[in-house]
Image (cartoon, rainbow, N blue to C red; front, side, top):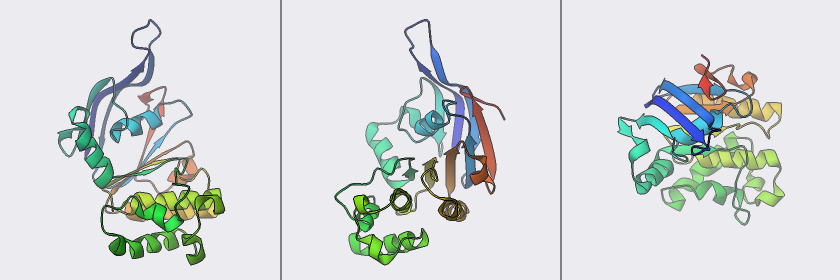
Amino acid sequence: MFQIKDLSMIYDMNTDLRTYALKGIDLKLPDKGLIGIIGPSGSGKSTLMYCLSTLKDPTEGIITYNDIDITNVSSSERERLRRREFGFIFQKHYLVPYMTAIDNVMVASVKGRDEEKKKAQALLSELGLSEKEYSKRPANLSGGQCQRVAIARAMINDPKVIFADEPTASLDHANAFNVMKLLKKYSEERLVIVITHDKTILKDADSVIEIWDGEVSR
């Protein structure tokens, strides 16, 4: 699905003190499976995710997704990919504060409201939210509940790829286990990329990529 060739992200390009967030990365990622990308803070793992998902442009290199060079497509095509084929889970939930939990899930849907409402409810239930919490706004939910709403939002369109950046950081152990179990199940038919510094959540990963100082170590 993804092929990455000689990928680099360089900051301070016009100075003598160039900083490499990524340096000459070559990778091939499968069509499905749970892939972990691990490394310490500042290692470049999140930058790699942002480049793969078209949220950032690399300085050098090529990324192909289903044989399309996504480093060289229009902004409208990038938007289409992010809207219809990619799902995103960030460390912060980025919920719309004036919307209920159920509406925050459905705001990402590309289908009709009635068609998706039952699906949104099923996702929230699977993630451990009760019916009474569906109508609550983010201010009336815990941080962990908000994160689970964000995870349901990422899954509502059945994306071909889910990019998850520290998806369990705000969750307790039991809920973190449940989320990773759900992502593992989803990865049986789709690609799930989990960015983390916590090896324990990747115990069921199909493969783990380690990044140090912007380079793949193994």
